[in-house]
Image 1 (cartoon, rainbow, N blue to C red):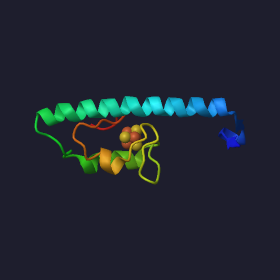
Image 2: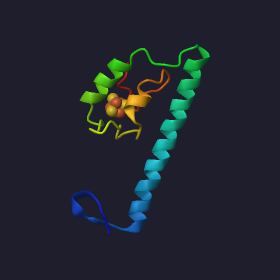
Image 3: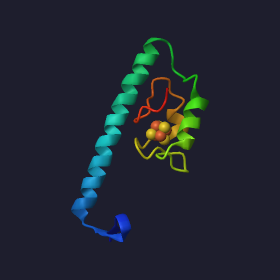
Image 4: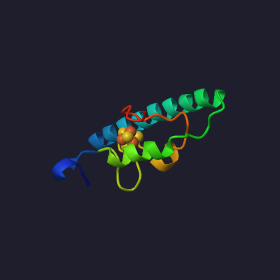
Length: 94
Ligand code: SF4
């Protein structure tokens, strides 16, 4: 039995839709990250110089989960924030 918000029982179809949306969002984020990485790599930038600033923003963000993942894009932030071309899905990184 799968429980959703406020203990409601989710049907397998609903659970499948949620997983489908999460997978679609993850793929969109993955494509955006890869294209950003390629653009930065063309300029010789691979490692973000502003890792600490990015993480400071993430630590205060409502989408940050305490295990280090972003609830919005599904990425592990201590890795993503080091990648020069990576972008915050909400545009909070400057
Ligand atoms: S990547 Fe963006 S949305 Fe995700 S936790 Fe960091 S600041 Fe928040």
